[in-house]
Length: 415
Ligand SMILES: [Zn+2]
Image 1: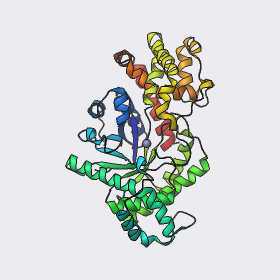
Image 2: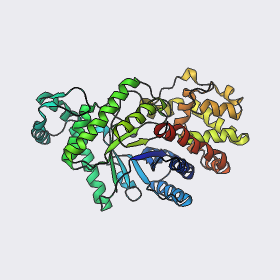
Image 3: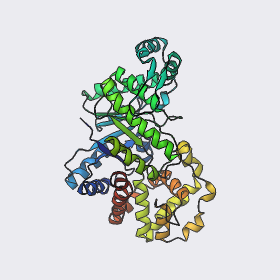
């Protein structure tokens, strides 16, 4: 199974928008951009919403059938580890092997010795074409990299082999992700991580490092764009070089776990992909669910009231909702509109406050981030929420399709 050059990870928390999401990719295709969909959902999302990996598979298959999509598509077991991978085996053909928690764990002395011996060959100046200054690699530097990443790569290998055994096949896409680590990985570190992956025989087709800057959920990039751009280009150079040097899969590409909506880095990414003729996997977060809320708000009446109820309860349970996402949100409580205010809004005001249109005077990223993590509240409403999704499918699917095409695919691939 060979992943195409351009792919997009589309989360869909409640599993109702598969067709609307796929329509965005069809629109892109009609404009000459071939991007394949990857429906991703993590164990955490499944457990909060009460869905199963089989549901995601069904959603993807149904959408593909309904729209006569004749290109590839994948179902991603997102951010899995040994603890939860087994639930996904039968339903996924894309596995995001998350080993961020294992970064910095000390490897056993024996494997460390082997690593130091094997990697001795890199002692001296390491020159990677496309990167200005050579890296100086000595014993100490290697020790540092080994103690930081060797354990994590070994864990990725264990999980990879486990998936092969359980599936009885190696015919799936493997991604290794480290994006939920505390610190960003440098291009130099990425080089050695890829070298270790090759040693371990992990044929990853995508790698998700943690990039410099903040990738908060559902809102724009926060950080130094010049620095990000340089790092991204160096990562592309590292991958290009490592593929040849270590005989990794020739389609190996970067996976950007964007947390959605990193509009301000789309242009540099687009420019660099063109310049280097490189592929990309862009994983978006479950912001499709925010388009559902926008659709409900625009539908007015009871649907608008439902959207307001979700906001009110999210505000009341702010601390509880924010806790698991503390590292990937930045919500200033003082900038959240109070519930009485929101109660007086019409659908347009609610939609414009929530929709990620940075130029709109009503857009409020704090409101948006709170609702993004408020999906637990919607999940608790059960059929009260999903029935509304079905009732207002038309207006919702229009929002979903437009969001993915207009705000993501077009700027990223056409400009
Ligand atoms: Zn991630």
